[in-house]
Length: 414
Ligand SMILES: [Zn+2]
Image 1 (cartoon, rainbow, N blue to C red):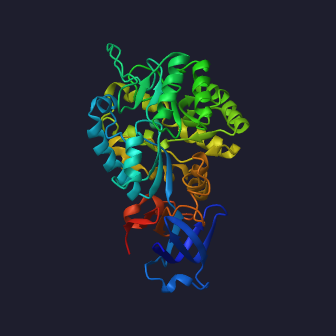
Image 2 (cartoon, protein in one colour; image 1 turned 135 degrees about the vertical axis):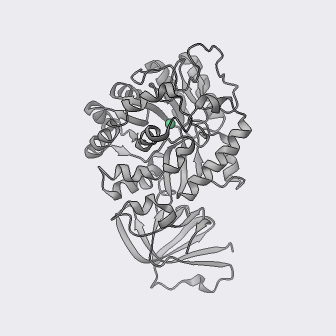
């Protein structure tokens, strides 16, 4: 019989009902939760030989957090520097970033460009300490698009053979199909398209649409043939709307959407993944973290609008998941997104975006994002009640007492 871990006297936050269940016992075996019951029920394993017991009296037990928009390779905000560095060096930097994420309580992250099957394998084999990794490999970008890191005077372009990079530049339906198939071949969990201008890209304007409808549909079709979905980098209503109408399922950032976008989100059951904290962090310290000075002005085109877009989408009932999109030294702000969103949403809804809802987006419902029998034992314990005070989640040094992934304890403070 394999080892059993028992968490005793926990107050469980059931994210589904929004209720706190005091005095619960959580029994874990083979990396999964096998039982969740009141302490008053007799525990048959009390006499088992291989048994680890933890006392969580006075602590709130939540599902491990999920960040649905990260870049684990982004050790600098200068994406050109990143693309030009050795992939081995980048992997070592990613290891530190992923460990930081896990120790903040994120037991699963969805990478939105850069991480590949090698990093994913290293985490699965326990060579790297980090969250479960959902990957897309390289993001697909058109010439001059958000993942084209060349300055206007540069000619050489990253090609499909570039081993580790944020993006690959491909144009036209045949190239988009080939690049999508290539990422599927390399183990992608989802496909990422750059469908509009971005802050960190040197030559595009934020309001540019990128890729033709035919190119977007080609990627969506190829992804769908492999039972995968497409996520897209988009800011404006126009770029969000054309993406949703082409079948893109997960729309990132979305700072500049309007009511017409909200209608389409609802009609197509699409997902919105705001990443508000990254603009706050970029405005405060982006340049010192490596963001080229000549693109800094682009931050202010999206900084203030994002929270209004979130509020509008939330009130209308759009599917929302937690995302951060932080780069370089700014990764330490990963939990601040909770506090920003709590300005316009109840704490429970923000917590659901980082657990229950994010698991739905990842198509891992029942396995991730809940404290329930059958789910992975990805759990965090905090001191205090995050339903009443969101700062219980944003100050891990003070409140985070336990981080467990797949039944293994990575952080524990008594
Ligand atoms: Zn991103």
